Length: 246
Image (cartoon, rainbow, N blue to C red; front, side, top):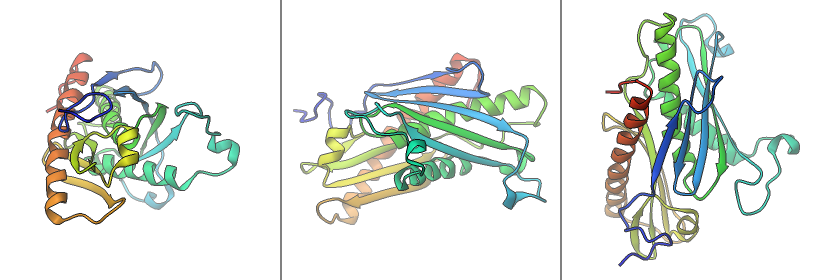
């Protein structure tokens, strides 16, 4: 019998929904709903390179991440008001950028930058993994638009990328942790994977006690099961707007 707050089985993900083309003005956008976690992802295309790439033909993909003040139980001040970007925000937006670049041929982008803004509307655990999963759908749209305009000859994306969380809660391995589970997890992992079966990044820690190599392998197997389901959701969302993703 399940011990999870929302009645799920340990290997069951929260209900996930991705709405592509959510914003009218962005070159690509997606609203991802993962249980009670909701993240809006939007891509902007600019004909410029970051300074460290000037003189090359390579493009760049980067990300910015933020949580709206009332995305959580109590109001959090905007980081712009505080005059600084917090360490957690820096870490997450770098993770999103690395995840997207891992499946992008930057040389095919030309001298341009794709910036993905990921804004958390509502948080209940897994905001960074939801952002990565939604961001891929948004950037896939932006790349398709560039191809249609004749700006680039073909999509620079090699394959899809998605992410999920796993952990050990009360001694039980669980997939896709909500906030209550994440707060109680003895072991907590975030796993980013590509549709080609490769790992982009694994973030894992023993929150209350060490874990074995076998426990880590079991958690990654569980994560892969969840990510495979997310790839199908991404593919279905893109099909809604006429984009066929391999």
